[in-house]
Length: 97
Image 1 (cartoon, one colour):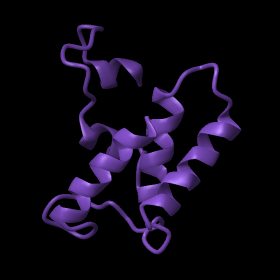
Image 2 (image 1 turned 180 degrees about the horizontal axis):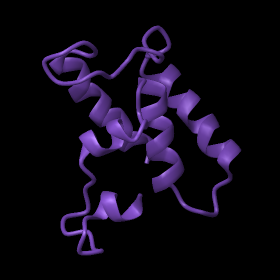
Image 3 (image 1 turned 30 degrees about the vertical axis):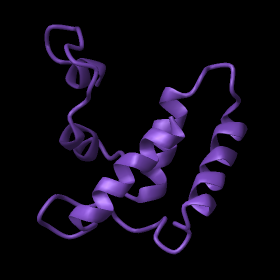
């Protein structure tokens, strides 16, 4: 799986992972999952899993997302979040990292 995420050459070129690859692999179906995925992978290893998940709850409450946290992200132009909601999700993902 890692080879698919970072490419056949075995190295990341620009520090990003194709979102479609993540979705097809079953990651980040809901807003909460996207935030958890970001926090668990990008926060320090010294921070416990429990603390990372607690921080996600703080962000969700701080940004008043509790009513939409389980909404499907979906695909651009398809079912799921609107363009504006996607932009906001991107900002929130950065806040949790």
